Amino acid sequence: MEWDVIEVRVKADNALHVHFTDGVQGTVEFDNSFFYGVFERLKNPKEFRQVSVVDGVVTWPGELDLAPDAMHDEIQKNGTWVLSR
Image 1 (cartoon, rainbow, N blue to C red):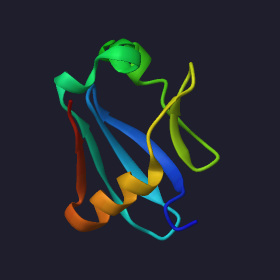
Image 2 (cartoon, rainbow, N blue to C red):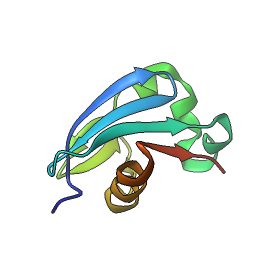
Image 3 (cartoon, one colour):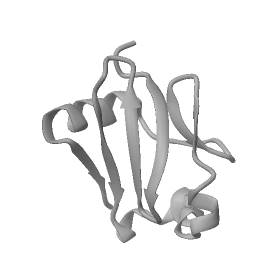
Image 4 (tube, rainbow, N blue to C red):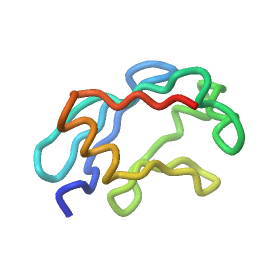
């Protein structure tokens, strides 16, 4: 799929750089308000940096992931996807 992620890199304790199969690249920024519920443990930089790509999806241990299609659409439009609560 065009929105499959092929690379993810940590830019900061609250930001990622992602690269999709169709060449689209951009940033995912996490507002502090996003780190609640199941995502609360990602406040810890050590946990946040465990990010990887599994089957085209940005994923963390414990079955946490981000919707690649929504991420792709927002990054394609704006270059950045800001996640907040």
